[in-house]
Length: 231
Image 1 (spheres, helix red, strand yellow):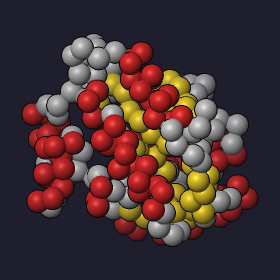
Image 2: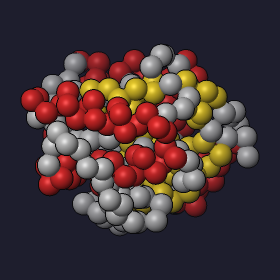
Image 3: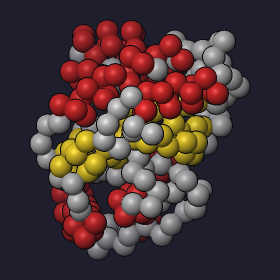
């Protein structure tokens, strides 16, 4: 482990993409610049409540998880992780996922592909395997925290083997927009965010992976390096 630092392999839009600006505004944090952009004003929820409902995604920045946060295993370094990520990205080609929709997942809202993408599934599966050698095994405290959620037997097996329950068949690509919303506000917030997303909506091209870094637990993640496919 390298101090309290954690790293993660995410998909994040290019920083010059309108989708990045949209997502960073919704969660209230730009993981590239560290800026705190103004969040959208929604008529269906107060600014204070919306800020509270986006506290969790604000810590991570706008992203979709491919390999969730981990401490570096003893003997590995961030330079080796970045080199491996660069080699991984260089071996892949960009692909089009198609349209995204604002969708409710387990109480929170995210941008989710409107149709299944075999290329996206393969990318996530390969990231889980390729970067696992860098990951310190899950601590008992983190395992206990994960076990507070209702998990299936397969999810528990994946948790113990890969440090995360939602991999392979359990994986669902999503760009998180909010934390858990109250049941009576979810539909209205979903409709409001769908309207805000419409002007920037475009088929999603997955053209790279991003290495995010968290200096200490509880601090916000920052984009350390974005690695373009085929570069």
